[in-house]
Length: 135
Image 1 (cartoon, rainbow, N blue to C red):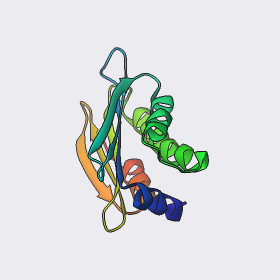
Image 2: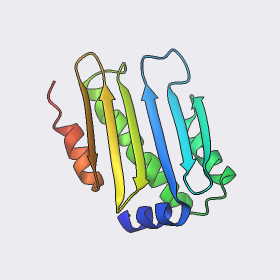
Image 3: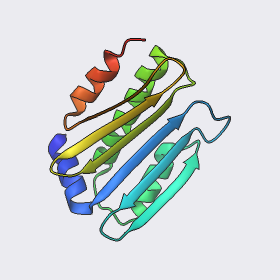
Image 4: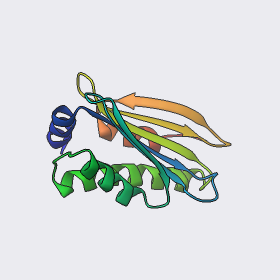
């Protein structure tokens, strides 16, 4: 799947920013897709993050398989689930993915118990970081 992500970002020159904010009363999610080449940014606070994400991909004419879109979004949801199970729903979690030299994954976590950031080129390392968080 990594190779598909690499090609996805390489072909489209985009940065994806997904945020879950459990402190909000509605529109718990923020979806931002930034096309660096065209300096075009799509932004929306929503309670339907996957639909918004897919609509933005379509609006920016990014041609990738639904499988890749689903896998990318699924990684965000899995990380969010692990965090809310560890902390609670009041966590604020940001997940950013972009291509620099390699595909880079960046997370930021903030709650009453913890504030931390982590960046890596391996998605498995991001999952391990979240798994090993100690509160």
